[in-house]
Amino acid sequence: MKMFSCIVAILAAAALASHAHAAHDKYSSMQLQEVIDAAMMMVPQEDVKSLVETKNYGTAEYVNTCTPADGKWPWPSVDEATGLWKRVVETGELKVAAVQWSNFEVADYKTNPESPTGFWPEYLQKVVDQINNYYGDKLPKKIQVKRTYFETSALVTDEVMRGENVDVSEPYYYINGFNGNKPRIEVMDFSCVSLGSRGYFFTKKGSGITTLDDLVAQISAADDSQVSARSVGFIGKGNYDSNSAVLPASTAPQYLTNHTEMEQAVNNDPPGLVAGYLSEGFPPNMRDNFEVFPTGFMSPRVFLFRKEMPAEQESNDNNEGPLIAGLCALSLTVLVLGVVLSLFIYRERRGNPFFQPLLDPNSV
Image (cartoon, rainbow, N blue to C red; front, top):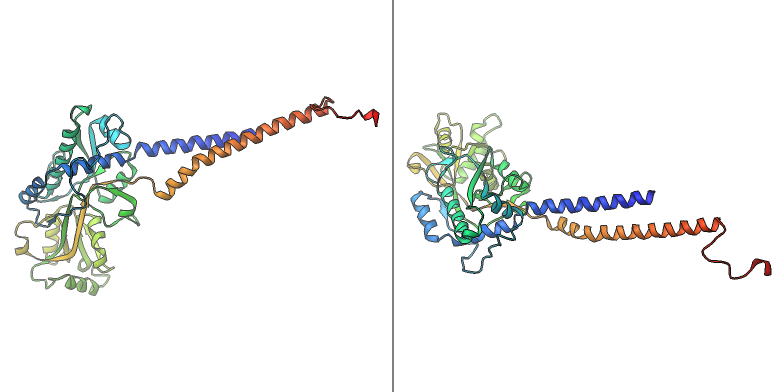
């Protein structure tokens, strides 16, 4: 009975492992990433440059991590779609995780959340248009962007990593920075670089803080009671993480998703922020109204995806199937041997052994 219970437990473990692997495949981002990369390579560079100019994206930089080339970028099949790409095909929706923020013409997700405007929403639409153009009638439904808004970028990346409710992030996320206590580049997958942007800090006009060194000195000199003298405004945590290496540890990041509010906080008397961070273009008259100076960083922007299973875990899972199969075989072998041995003992006790003695005991 104990042997039977052992075998049942092993088979149950095998079933659970198979179920876990199936769940992993259900949210695999591999094919979706291939689709989006291929679509990004199909968006004409002239269109991107035109968007940068018309949306006054003054901090934008072109970063080419991928090379456009016909026939070089794979487009996964619609009929054999798997993972998140299969979900996109079946629902006709690309579920995008976003934060409601606004920064003039570069992006405005607040005024009309259902139809946001600016460089980033229009760039995403160009990518989706390329997907629809390539697959055409092969798609059961034309793919539409379906945004789900979250309060912070940290919540966005958490949802993307889960894969249950969203497929991908907006295309403006930083590769650098952290997800919790782990480097983002290690725990998430990402697309080709959509664009890069140079970062700038801005301070109150006449504050005397006109360089990064001045800002660092100001923050370092402020004591714990002077919170505003240590506070720097950012649109999201990823922006702070990407610049935290050049700022003192005593910096108090403040997150404001509306850039106008950030400017007001810097310009108040006394200021609510010692500085603000600017990465999404220069607002009108920015240099006339504030001291503006570079951070020294250029940040690549990407779509973020759920990362495939870590290599070491995948390696363990790859060994798990053969291991369970081996344990099952061993258990069955032991069970068979146990049954045979029991029969031998039973027959022996009944005086009817399987093998009769070779010599007659009465003849000795």
